[in-house]
Amino acid sequence: MHKGMPVLLVLLTALVLMLAGCGPAATPTPAGGPPTQPPTPKLPEAATVARPQPTSELIGGATAVLGATVEPTPTPRPLPTRPPTATPIPATATQAPAPTATEIPPTATVPAPTGPVEAPMVEIPAGEFLFGSDEQPEASPPQKVNLPAFYMDVYEVTNAQFAAFVAATGYKTTAEQAGEPSWRDYFGQGKEDHPVVKVSWYDAEAYCKWAGKRLPTEQEWEKAARGTDGRRYPWGNDFDPEKLNGMEAGYRRTLPVGSLPAGASPYGVMDMAGNVAEWTADWYQAYPGSTYRDQYMGEKFRITRGGGWFSDKEQVQTFFRNSTAPEAANDDLGFRCAR
Ligand SMILES: [Ca+2]
Image 1 (cartoon, rainbow, N blue to C red):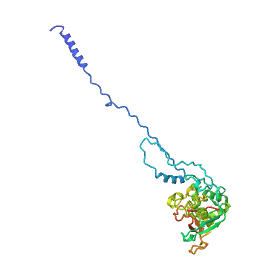
Image 2: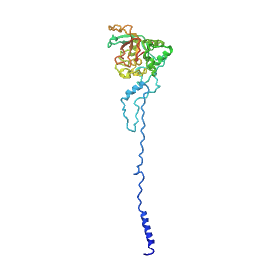
Image 3: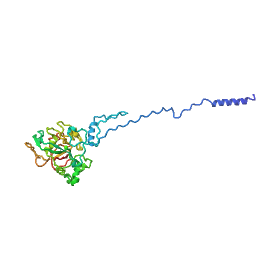
Image 4: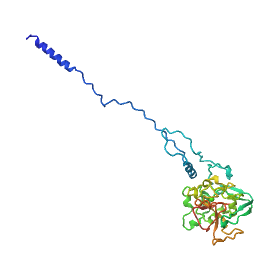
């Protein structure tokens, strides 16, 4: 063997080894598996469109009725801008006292009277009107009655007004004296501008006297509600559950006085149908010329008029007579005063 062979072998071996070490290296797999796609930009969340919330019990009721015609299901994103369905009513809107029915926008609010001196009255002019109806035996026969001019409270007496009377006089109502639920239970619910309830005829008379007024007679009450054209409801002859707080409207509670101005009488007197029935000065007795009699007639029961939130469309008619024991105190019975 050539003496240089070992060196050559060593070199060859080294070459082979070197070639083996420099073979194609495996391509490293990127960590984390297949490459990630660029992130898809997230769509911005659609803005929530807040609907105007009712600001009072009245508005709430009215909105609920209106809301029934609005599609309540969620709208696919993005939400379209849609105009409000109800005209926002400023909380501080004011209204001139005793406007006529046709001048009152249907959504107007009426400020709550805060005291007797602030209770607006309207003059009911002297003259004839149609009193009574042959549709109710107790209210027959219908007849023309001529009354001198008088003034009528535009609104039912409120809790706030009655509270002012009690604060000034220390008066205790018939119900309070008997230890029964009283007007205070309702006043304590934030219902300052609701009609006072749980007041007896004696309580009503005492309030009106303190305020320099008196309870209206039955004839005065009917004229203020009915006007001179013999209408069936304060607003006209056709029943409309949206113009009063009666059974058909479904509120099942009192509303702030003057909440439904579309139901005003021809003289602008509010809530002469519904909300609360109202004490009058008169006993339940037969009308002149009437042959109708029943056992409750006489000086036993006082006439109430107009029906309340629990009364149906028959009982809220302008001529409809109801009567109650003078010491009774109900949660749908209040009053207003005349002068
Ligand atoms: Ca009423």
